[in-house]
Image (cartoon, rainbow, N blue to C red; front, side, top):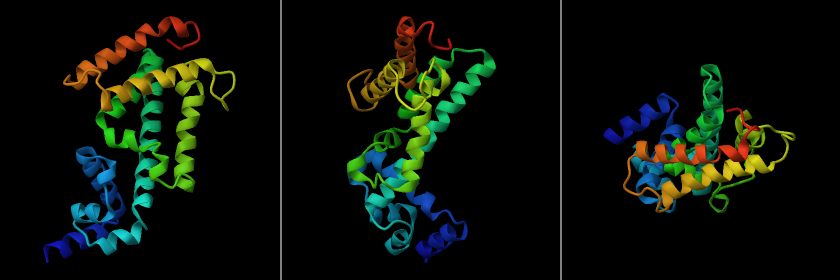
Length: 207
C-alpha cells in the first residue's frame, strides 16, 4: 500500500521522470554510472519498474536524459556566472572557469555523464540540442569571456580555457589532485590555476 501511495503521488504531480533522474544522480554518485539500472532507480523513486519503463525505454534512454540535464545545468551555470560577473564588474573569465569546476565538484555524476557517448543515445534530439547549447558557450569565447573571431569553431584560446578547467575538474573528481581537501580548498587551488593562466589570455580575455 505504501508503495502504491508513493507511486500515485509521483504521477499526480507529474514528476516521475524527474524523480528517476534524481535517483540516477543518487545511485551514480554513490556507486558509479555503471551501477545504475532502471529497476534500481524505480525502487529508489518508490515506483514499480513498469512505471519507469513508461518514461524510459531502457537504461541508455535514462542515461541520455540524465546527460541532457547535465549539459543544460552546466550551460546555465556558465551563462549565469558570466552575466553576474559583468554586472558586478568582476573577472568574468575567472567566474566562468570557477563555475565550471564548481559544477563538477557539486554534481560529479552529472559531470561524468555528459559525454559518455558509449552509454547514451548521442543522436537523441534533446541531447543534441543541449550539447549544442553548451557548445555555443564553449565556442563563443568561453561564455563571452575571451575574444572570439569565429563562434562556429574552437579557437586556441577557447580550447586552452576549456581543456584547462575541464582537466582540473576531472582531476578533482576522479584523479589525485587535492584528494581529501574541502570544496573551498579545491576552488582556491582552481582560482590560483586560472590566475596563472592570465598571461596567456591578456589582453584577449575580459578580465
